[in-house]
Length: 428
Ligand code: BGC
View 1: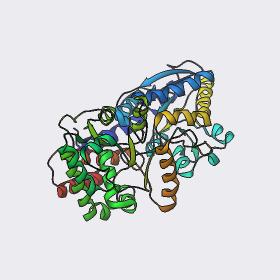
View 2: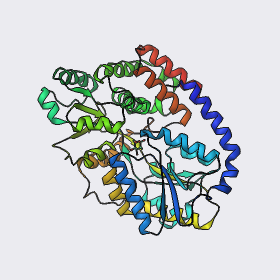
View 3: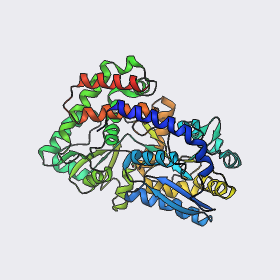
View 4: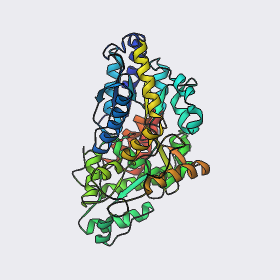
């Protein structure tokens, strides 16, 4: 595991190098791809994810645009971002890449991204997209990325048969989670299906932050990076709660992929997984039905709140007209109602654009849609920091490192807070 400071200095060095080479890359970016073809970097390699991305490929093929797949396995996208940086540095970025949140601004500031504002204006994106989505897609007021979905991250996926067998009930608070998880464990189950990878540790940590501290605290501490909110009794309680979860994860969790953890819930080996709704794609691929085979509830203490994670494709500037045209076709297809429906049915997320029928979506998706609207009105719609929606990549890396260092050691809650505060300060 790497220390936060190392990652931060790597990020800084990388940024400098990328800056210097941006101009070269712009000239060379289309060299490896023929006309009317897009090379697309993404990290969607699990069953549900692959079904989703295949639909995009099909849609583009129907529109006469070829697809060169640039998949880099690794949940959460850390590997994909590393590979993307090296491709960009070598002057050969893909046509489009799965880039999210503030990172879009970072790539835009470096001069890499193409302006797809013409497509956006022609298709009225400003009116099709909620402002919380469209704001992220623009750089200097122009669209440079297209959103495919809105994931809700603060979910818990549970196997109701496991709970029933253990005489346990699905918890709605973190205090109750500890009680019910003990019952699951006593009945011989793994209480919390978890993959010990930094981004998964951060995903659970984020759910604890929201569940213990609430949306105001979440925003102050993890969006505004207010040092008083970060260095507080609430953060101490967050680390205590997070630390209490260590006992409910099995010894084989280190390195486990998130979808393998989901399959533990599917197969009845584990009670619950805390994971964004891409997990639903795995239940779907396994032929499971919501309500009977599995249950989706808000992560403990977070009902009514919505931690959003918007997947989007950012477009890299091209030097020839055919590649630019292929990009424009891709951008336009992505915002189509049929694409947003089928893609999100497979992916477990909800459409990013307005005006898509709810009819085909299940109850989890309806909950997510309703929570998105009500949380937006009540101020509890929060960006996922574990999934790159809230912070610069440097600060996000520091938070992930602190969460993962804590979870995978016997560090005290007080030391966890101190390390978090110090590493955020160093990365800002
Ligand atoms: C992405 C999802 C993806 C998940 C697991 C998240 O960061 O937003 O689209 O399914 O990582 O790989």
